[in-house]
Image 1 (cartoon, rainbow over the protein chains, first blue to last red):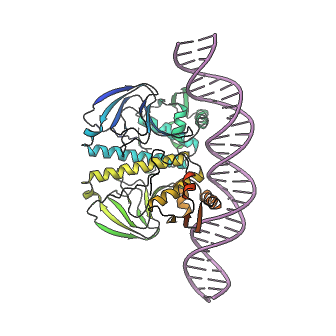
Image 2 (cartoon, rainbow over the protein chains, first blue to last red):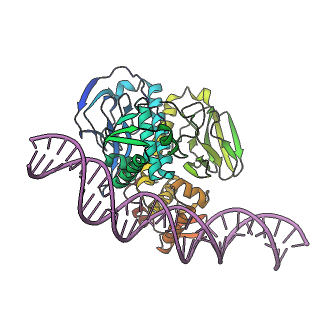
Image 3 (cartoon, each protein chain N blue to C red):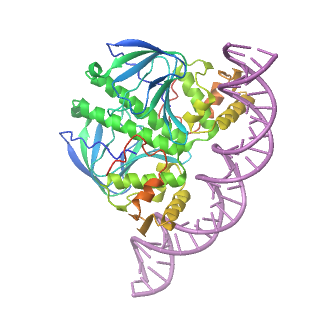
Length: 211
Length: 211
DNA sequence: CGGATCATTGATGCTGTTCAACAGATGTGG
DNA sequence: CCACATCTGTTGAACAGCATCAATGATCCG
């Protein structure tokens, strides 16, 4: 998974907003008139199905942009999964910054394609190992991760069930690859072992990006 | 799945090339100095793993563009799966057409995200039904589909095995939803039934786009 | 402390994979 | 034109991994 998520500096942030944990940022069908940059907290972008199921398409952490879509209406939901502060960019002014928009779209495409490969071809434990590795990279390479998201969020992101995620984490713990100070605080004891558990799909083209 | 695949007319096609069935168009690691528009035939974009596994990210039919990627090197393989004629666009000149590139990137992102949802949340028969529906739409809504791709290609696209794809097709046939004149020639006998088999993930936000 | 939410663990079953054999189509040479 | 080889697709049986159902444990917050 690419650690890079576009952090382009688009000028003219119109405002800064703060969302509480669980608060909706936009809904499916809402106008795509803004995009956002997280300054603190974390955001979940997902689709919800009639039967209650959910597919999380992406998480966005501090520094990362999201909310850019092609059509006039959003095709996904975005919610804060922790108390989150964001810069808001109005679409009108932003459209004069085509190169930045292009970078955003391309990054979104690449991440979706990598995620596709993971969900299509990796086992449960590989997905979880990859998830933790990616998160560690995006947090700047820390070995201690504080998960902003619940097990249910992780499950919906990795296309698994909450129980399977839990069992995978337990197995990583039993193998001493990670340790849990808390259900939401993961310490990566053996980064090499974790990486080797990620399997083939971990960006074979990329030379083990340092994070 | 969105039927729309960008067919933007970018001027200055530098050349027209023809590829034989099975011929490689670009490889992982190749320079991303061109992009392509299929004029006849079909193209498969995929990633190949060390263990021989493969994930097909997209197919591209007549009129559709592909090959646009962010970095300097391709992250996937592109191959012709039938005799294919394509217009080639050099990257340099094309970069003056930012709006068109943006449309390409956004379309790629959306398709990858929709594909993600399908692979993450749909059963085998739902995936196959959706695949056939999407293909029919992209071919202009024909009820008779000539599949350019093999069962293996379909399996790698839908993240299933060839056997499971075969069984799903057999079941659709036994339910009289489709008929096979030939393994590669599918006739959609009951489009409504086929659509209803696609399940939730079939673009809930889109009002059943006609194709 | 007590209730609610979140996470872990266990037992069982289903879906899709794997391994294996067969069938149909395509192509080649005698 | 038919025998033979090859490639592609279908079908069957057994298995594995993950989901499901159910219960227990941990954490948070009043």
